[in-house]
Length: 222
Ligand code: SF4
Ligand code: SF4
Image 1 (cartoon, helix red, strand yellow):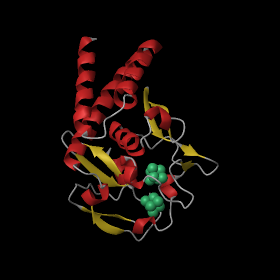
Image 2 (cartoon, rainbow, N blue to C red; image 1 turned 180 degrees about the vertical axis):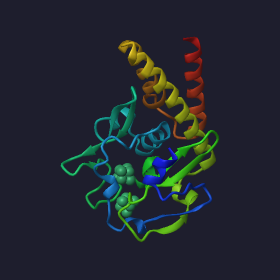
Image 3 (tube, rainbow, N blue to C red; image 1 turned 180 degrees about the horizontal axis):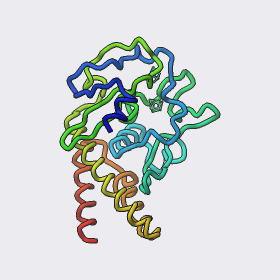
Image 4 (cartoon, rainbow, N blue to C red; image 1 turned 30 degrees about the vertical axis):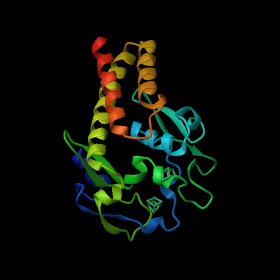
């Protein structure tokens, strides 16, 4: 893992208070990382909460227009949709700017950083050569994340990551036994509980904790 990281990063691991060379002068007319990203900009429940409550559109209304669902390790998850011959993010406007800047997903916020999930915290690495702007300046990492209540957000990301991993593990086993209907049931449960059921606009973290506890109770009963 560390060797892989050395190949794609600048070799350093960053924490929230570290200075990191990512500030790209407001992108200066570049929109490179908003195009051709395939299905890689995955959305988590916080992203969907932010998008649905911020735009006033339901998950179903966004689906097919600006977001799509894809399968990652057997688990169905939403991701940003790329459109047209230039494969632009559906939220990229005609001037090459993000039309939902304040609501943009977490993966857009951290770019060109990547996350390293540790047991009790998240560290970051800088994907070298990922950003087209070469004369980037340093900024405190926590400021670059541009996410309020970042400690709560970090805890949410760790919980969601662990949950995803356990569901993916389960689905891999289930699919090996070719039990497609069990995999479908689990996928519908996760999609419905964490993405399709509308969120209230305030206090995402309490709503997420409630849904995680529903998921835990349901898993225990199986
Ligand atoms: S949501 Fe905004 S920042 Fe993210 S890929 Fe789309 S246009 Fe770019
Ligand atoms: S590649 Fe860098 S400069 Fe270009 S849009 Fe992405 S973050 Fe901005």
